[in-house]
Image 1: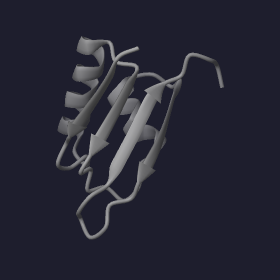
Image 2 (image 1 turned 45 degrees about the vertical axis):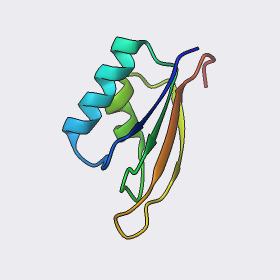
Image 3 (image 1 turned 30 degrees about the horizontal axis):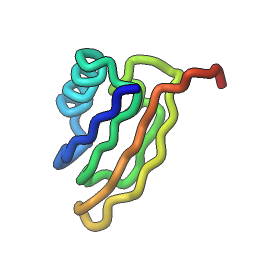
Image 4 (image 1 turned 180 degrees about the vertical axis):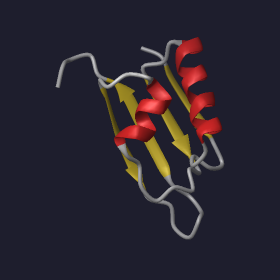
Length: 80
């Protein structure tokens, strides 16, 4: 199992989501944690842009006043 973390300093742009997707693919990650997302809500579309697959799950902690925020996301090995 491969795990990574990244202080992303903002999760809102498609450029950042593309960078996450590249890291996930290049490193063959199973789990990635993102800190300092500065993001209030995380939706399925955000995660699909990062993973490129549907079989994922995530949990997040909302940023407050454009500061903080966490996302932990992982590849599921079982069908939903």
